[in-house]
Image 1: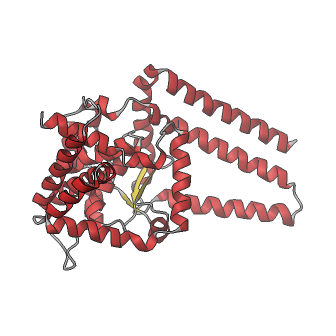
Image 2: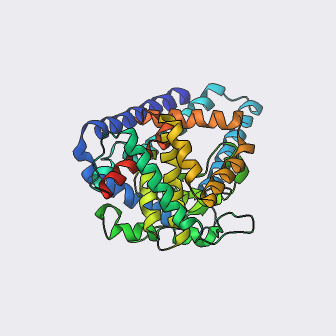
Length: 353
């Protein structure tokens, strides 16, 4: 009977979750209330987790795995029903899915960030893509030699200091766009399992259950400030990955710290360059050959930095992330990260019109 009861409750939570998704997908007015609710929920949960210098969710995840293993062992040692245990796991997962979707996940169906900032996104020509890429390269190059660097030539970073100040870019944006006008943003958390996340290709992650934006400290230096702003964009209910990248660009380049500004322009160049490389390798090569040595060196060091972590583990993790994104109507899956180029080019065309 316990097994049946758990399965019934699992079905109830699954149906409730699907109902929430249906409402979000087909009732646009739903977001008149949901966005504020989600932000308040993240502020409350993040406020509980903020006193801890580590990502609380990482500890909770380990404890949950240990609990599941403990109950599984007890199931066999005390000869309890394995199906009942499986039903319990299914119930737990259905509850977590319901909470995730209800608290934050529905932001995937919210009005786009382009609407929030008054940006018109249309198609673009190859020439416009080339011009935008050259512009991003020039902006990044202008800052590349101004920022403080290590003896090895990398951008000099202080994770703790940057984690505390990352929200300053959004504070500046809040004076221009109401969507970003929030009282205070939390400190970005340093992820404890850096090696694990590096092998899965994860530079940052936002966990709605604790309202924490976490970043892998092993992220390449030139991308670190931008990545912090990306994860804070998720905290601000920007769920789509391309939109979080665009929000991070706006926040980074509006930040008073030159390191954040450089990181923003550097990242924007990377996204636009990759799009141009796919469209016209000859033009991409011309921009690459003509840009600053310092910017080019950062790009090369970034590739060398991440290369040792590439492999089967990263491929598997990417497939999981791809499935998650597609489940929330992001048709391009992990390719959506690169779709930030569409928003960046639209922004460039609007700014230079």
